[in-house]
Image (cartoon, rainbow, N blue to C red; front, side):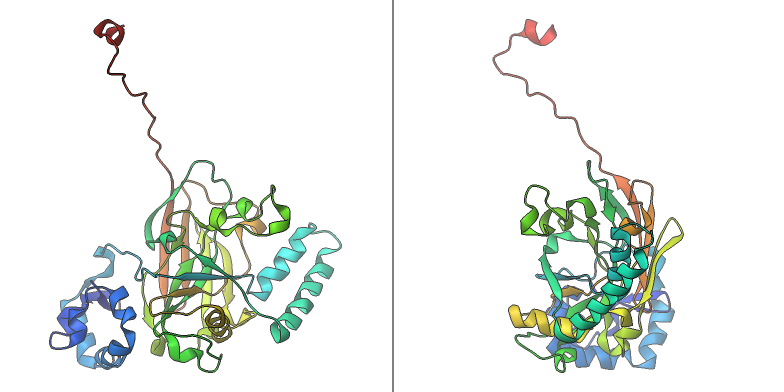
Length: 329
């Protein structure tokens, strides 16, 4: 069920909206899928000082809640290579940090400015089955040795959109949440098919590799997404730290681009790119025992502990035709 959160206290939505249709919504996903019917009601409810007082007096501490991903999207999109600092960092790293690194960085930034003016975002369609919880264990499968982090701002769509312009894009945004677009870095490119480019199913298909949340924050509480600060740490060491105004293509241009090629529906999620500081840059990847904290200003913080997947040995089935002597040895 959906809950309202205020100052680390939470209360089920239906307890604050007893006499409203809003109070009969069974999940946040259901609420967003019918966002045009509920947006004004929710905005009115959450702006009332008495509601905040009720949450404070009757709510529970958020630390006592079992948090799941706030949204289970039908479509999930991820924008690739959308922060100037990250692209410049990758260009510098490509040939080592020797004498040519500064030149490669400068050339990458110049190319990005041209692309920002005349180009388009690069977006992949990814499986909603990837969506995982924002708090708890992150299971790493056997053989996954290059699992990389990517803290992002996830845009939650609240209206149907097809072939819209960047100027009208804000009108289809229901809200925002934190995402970590985890990627098996060594599987992005296919050695057996080098001319076909990136393979997102094997590099971004792992169950739980797109943790969302902890909170869904309505768009009216995020007046300027470009001012949001994204940070990610591993075992207390900061790996990523930048502001969303470093995006090559802002949120509105990304939404417009995706809507030009497919129809967006309420509840769809668009992850908008990740700043510099990937594990590939730092020379280390996630492994069992690591604790990953991904956070965005005003959208909350994820906290995941990496654990190894427990494998069960496969036992050879007993043949029904074996004799008792054979079974006993």
